[in-house]
Length: 251
Ligand SMILES: Nc1ncnc2c1ncn2[C@@H]1O[C@H](COP(=O)(O)OP(=O)(O)OP(=O)(O)O)[C@@H](O)[C@H]1O
Ligand SMILES: [Mg+2]
Image (cartoon, rainbow, N blue to C red; front, side, top):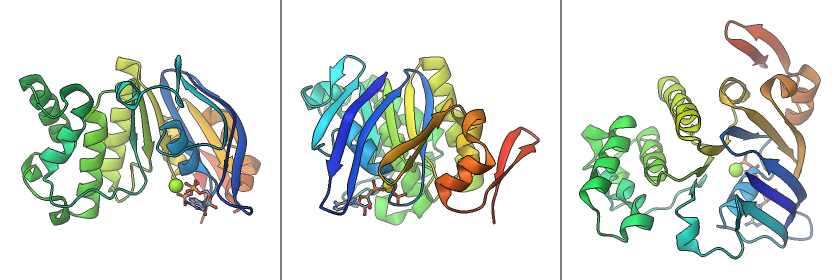
């Protein structure tokens, strides 16, 4: 379980996030949705301790994010940031190998290499594994970053817009993989998504953030309602029954 208690971040006198009180259950996928600038990345990076909070507490299972050592936290939690500024003179395989760093401290074992190959293969990067990051398309590079994060194999996985730049097939595969990681290995996955239909199809819970506050938290069935989505996204949305569940329509 991840628990946020009175969490606040004040960037300046005009922009502040929170206070946020939120409990994200252990296991399953929780999607963070909401308009640009709502505070999704701010919340995610505070949970991942990449950004300090001004007040409040965040707990991941029994670990207090503010006091747990980084090297211990890295074994239970991995995070993909929205923007990645890695040195481009790294190959795909080297980048993915960084995911094993909390275990290997730079000396990769045969088992680490196997795990690296598994995620490279899973994200269809095998033929590209020796390419440098600046020699990839946007979607291929995004898949390499996601492979690095998944390769850490942590119980808690935070992903900020992992579907960025991905085509439909890769987006579907990514969400199916996240769902099986949650179901088979009991992982807790928090994912920022802009596509509400992907969120509805694959999440156990949807958490809507707007103007620095949590405005809705519930199952997809609870959140997928015309007036709720219209309010969250500031644009008319109609929910219809699709072939595989509820679908939000907007244009
Ligand atoms: N370093 C910063 N300094 C000042 N303001 C910031 C900083 N980072 C973010 N903000 C502001 O905080 C608010 C929340 O930003 P955040 O990145 O969390 O939004 P988001 O929900 O992730 O949006 P998006 O969907 O566009 O990624 C925005 O108003 C943004 O302009
Ligand atoms: Mg963001």
